Length: 66
Image (cartoon, rainbow, N blue to C red):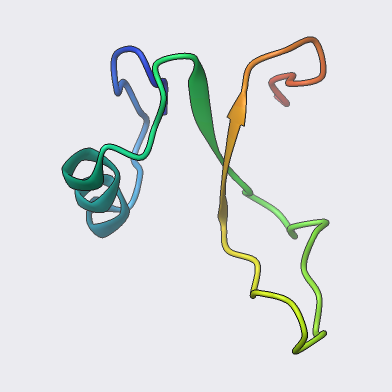
């Protein structure tokens, strides 16, 4: 999902509704959905659980996997 336009490709409707109603996505950011296994997943109860989506600003480290 692109922050400046909210353009997206098949994002879960409930998540999309939350992002738009709460206005949590900055214009300079994107939402990335992990298609495969999320590399940040953990089982440590001391930390918050990891979801399928990540909010981040775009920089040279964000690349599209084909």
